[in-house]
Length: 388
Image 1 (cartoon, rainbow, N blue to C red):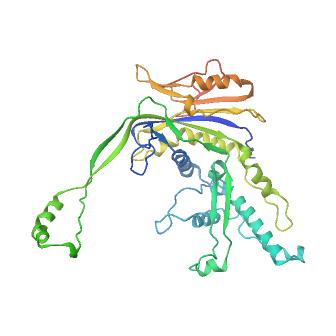
Image 2 (tube, helix red, strand yellow; image 1 turned 180 degrees about the horizontal axis):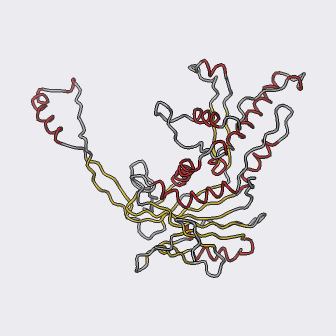
Image 3 (tube, rainbow, N blue to C red; image 1 turned 90 degrees about the horizontal axis):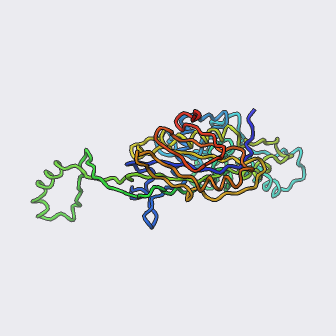
């Protein structure tokens, strides 16, 4: 039986990026703060995590479905949110709730306005019930804004027959991830020219053509045929992005209670809770997902270190953001040195509130310092084997 996860967790994860572009802005360059420091958004690491789980562990029948990720339909176009939700409901066949009906025999005397109010409330609960079947929502939460199928004049006949109201829901996810900051001393970007195998054809409107244009047209076409397009790409020479994250299972507790509430109108709903298995998958993805993604622009970016500080059940201790407390350098042998001394001091001060500290890194080329006499379980980030 799946065990409900109940501990609060603080942690950090480090992404190494060498001659790579882990998280680009809309100019296709690595993102930078106004002071020139390179950073990455939480969306970059969340995408990698969801992509890893989808490709390796997605199983709709066992509540391991990823909803908030781009999927292509039969027309090779991305699904809308409505389309993605309907696909999810179809794949969860037999384990989901789709329609809400009020048993009139048990509710004689209900006014139409009361029936409408009850129906709307139950629809929201059933939607939450369905959303919690998705592991990405159990982890990160979601803002769910579903348009009613009857609100569009151009709706298909099938939509009109299955008319539903618009729905807006906010699910506060247990896992919260900060923006990442490059904690390496340098923030060196470089741009390189790249040559396309294809030329760019210039189109001139008929009205703007002159006799001079016509006289030079043959020369222009000849030049175009001989030229290829030159583009460019910008990379970060070396950076070490440090993310801070927290896990608070209580973020979902209120929704669980709302969905679990007894109702005389429909059968009792038992929501899928955040489980130990969910956190194990999150931990594995956090350690491997960026290295696994390995796209043409992200090759050179990889998971370097992860730290999980699990507090004892019931602990109310809080810790600050780890991102600013971790520094990364290289020693004379070119090994990466991750200094977490400031984090170690914080953990030492609340040692009695900590259930366990887990550290994942590659001992072949990475040195992690700063935990002193703290009891730390150390693992190889490549295979999760203990580091001795």
